[in-house]
Image (cartoon, rainbow, N blue to C red; front, top):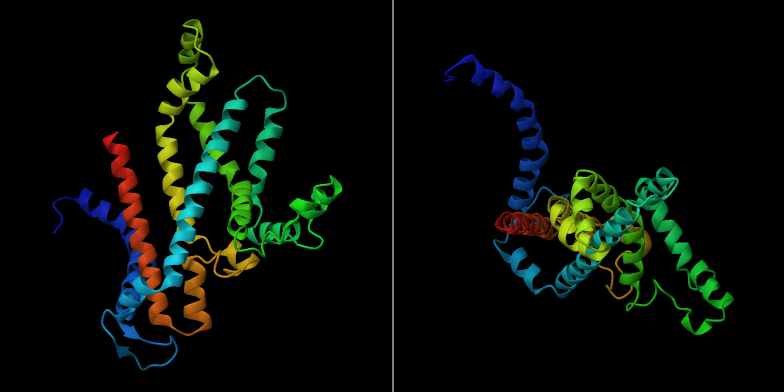
Length: 289
């Protein structure tokens, strides 16, 4: 079976990882794929085979489609904002500013805060009656701008985007800062000698040489967007009027609250498929460039 001892040793090394992935990844995906063809409440031993009915219901479910649109907007705005702000902070920290280590700690600190804490804090900030944001607006005589930020379907999603951007921009900054340390300083010196200003250096040196960091943040951002659940559920639970509903919160509602395990499994499987497709497209697009 094995041509030499080396091949046998290689198999032994990868076997634990293969077993772990099979048990905690392939088996669950196969299981939810199987029950997606049934009508099942998740508790009873009785299951009714319905074929592709759950998939048909998914593509005609207006709430599910609304959830996808919300996640698309969330992903585009939060990922690009975090990348832009993170890169900007990394560029600014290349200067000869004092106490750089303190700035790094401040930028990265929100990343280590639990999402439950972030949700609680921003719930208080956005509170309609005694929220710090509305109190601040009133104190500077901008009463006309006070608003029920999480209670209005037109602003709830964007208010939560700000919380997400605040928490995770530090991660983008950290990766960009690490990437910039690998750029040869002689490139900057040559550009300055040729008369290049800061904008030209950023456009022609920093951004092109940080391509691996860009693609890494895009992939991680897409996966994170599809997994987003906690901050939504802890603040708005998908409301008001489904304006902050995500597939993850909709799956929780259908599978746990309404005991529609088969339909919830179908939506969970769709998240996996979407994540795989987007990741493959991103990697292929990067390789072509």
